[in-house]
Amino acid sequence: MQIANDKAVSFHYTLTNSVGQILDSSVDSDALVYLHGYDNIIPGLESALDGKSIGDKFNVTIAPEDAYGEHHDDMIQVVDQEMFQGIEPLEIGMQFHADVSHGPGIVTIVAIDGDKITIDGNHPLAGETLNFAVEITDIREATDEELAHGHIHGAGCEH
Ligand code: ZN
Image 1 (cartoon, protein in one colour):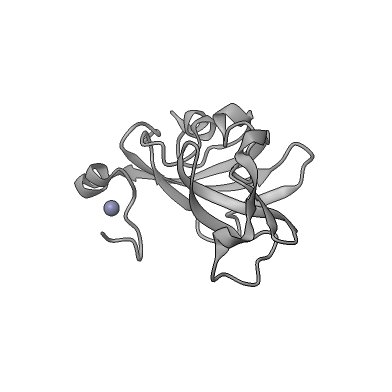
Image 2 (cartoon, helix red, strand yellow):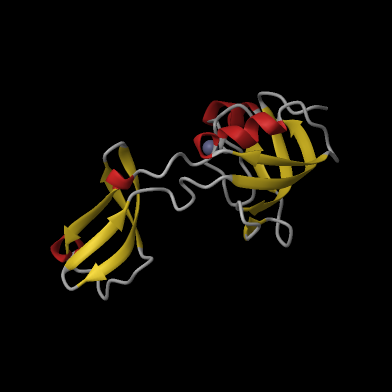
């Protein structure tokens, strides 16, 4: 069986950035499972996986536009601490769901200067060229319910 739309695909990956730092890896935990053709993973990785078979190993380098997008300076803004009423202490690295310019997203506190809080609405990997080392471990037909929902149902994910 080859990876194509409507297949449930399991794979292990190690993600490194352009200077070779490991950012994330599934190798010491469960393989990632996703539904192919439903934008469940970044576009550059999904297209690299297309047509692959169980046991295939490959490396792929993905530019920001096919990963988490370019880094936009205008998504960094300074807001007043009052925006975070009831949350303290505020710390650099805290993340919040917020309505940002392009819709709901996650903002990260990147600087704190007195009551002026700098928040960044970019994805933490925006602007990064990403390298994935991938090994395909399983491919199966998705269930009708998974296709209707547009995502995989696994352990603890029945809805
Ligand atoms: Zn579902």
